[in-house]
Image (cartoon, rainbow, N blue to C red):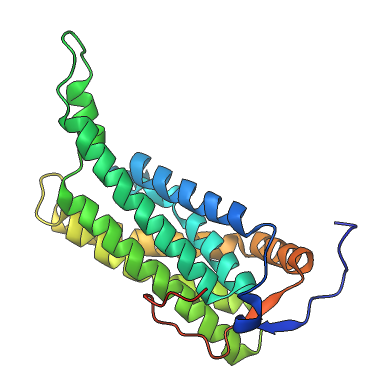
Length: 249
């Protein structure tokens, strides 16, 4: 990082930053979408567990191990580039989820070639019901926009101080809504998901995601600081239109 100044960049209003080109913004968007899709494909539908010291089992959704990384990237995007550019990334991720759901439905629905033994396994892994798809997309949309909104507002309230408070506080709200929406909407009443396990998974998802955010706070500080210096920007959302459907970037 010897090519960048050591002092932090001056604060920039969101409107002034909207016309600038950034070197790393597209890379963060690509990482966000990739983690979002992979965590939904691989981990969202599988409940797992850990054995507690007393011998009891604590259930959690397997996707929780990696999905929170997308929230951390979302925090970085909002903190460095502002709410409007984070909004663009959220909508890009939402569109990618929608296409993934359509592609999975189309591929699973195609008749398998004679002698191919993988159709049943393929349907089990990729043949999510539209209930699960709708739950995933709704939870993502609500949780990510809540996360970005809370972080951007807290940045104004704190005048850019206490980054740890903003990232953890926004995660408590955003990830809480994500977990509270997804699991009941997707799995309530289904075989293998008794209510007590469902509620336990919701609580554990919320707790683990928040702890993930707290544990990775030092990494977030390093990444945010490096990006602000390299991009020469520190966006404050003064006068920003926080409507999710606003078109301005």
